[in-house]
Length: 363
Image (cartoon, rainbow, N blue to C red; front, side):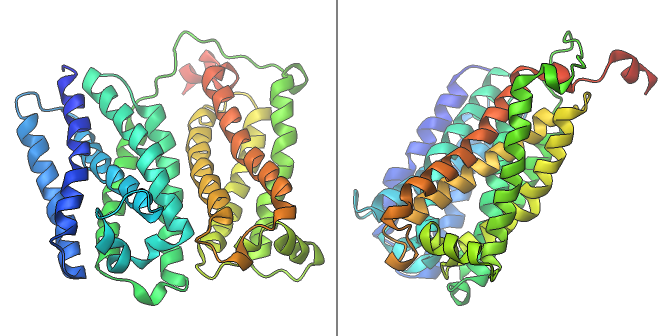
């Protein structure tokens, strides 16, 4: 397939700018905003089908990502208008349609979706266009999407805005359903792992980089469990002092940071234990995929958490104190970057995670 299909999706996504401006001046209530969102999806799919009907991509995810790319630009517009950089594009949406998006967490989600997810959608569309594999990028998106969806849905339901749920939550559930289906399609794609690689079984003492990662996993596990205990109102002096001096945002009534820390404790905690095993025992072929999903999830979570903790939309009493910012930034940035480094190591040097050829033949 030629590059025209991918270029068409890029141009289609930019059409969201004039469309948002036009409909912002026409929408008068929440019901109309909900109808606009649904109609926009139908219109985008119709335009995409018309544009590519002669060279229709065989992969249905092409159309899914085309729609998602469109709404990613909308989310970027939302973030820019929240910062008063632009005006008159999504004013009604910010004022009435979805109160959750006006929180610091919702603001950071808009930026993440409008920049990082948008880039991933374009890369996956380009891969589909050229017939290349996009499984690696797809798995990274799966982790980012799952973290975003779990925290946003649960936080919006149980937080202080839980009584303000409206039509847009239903539309968001449709987005979740389609995205989960996309996740399964990505997982079902064959791995791009090179067959000519030979499995290696070196001791951990002969793999100093892996030893460094093992040393990192122990405090990382302790840190995610510790923050989970903090949001569960642990009465320990350490927990209370940490909250007051470094992360008062964990007590924010929107419940997003609380849900995020609980998700981290319940899912990242077991992940660190499994990864310890994978780095010490050869032949764990699932390691590269698992680290991709987790690194995507933690990148989204830490970006949202760090920025929301410092953002002016967070009440002053819940922002990181000036004296605790250096420690807060150092710990949280390292906590976000180390999974990316581990993922890079597993993807670029996967020989240790391959099973010996004899084992595969026996199966």
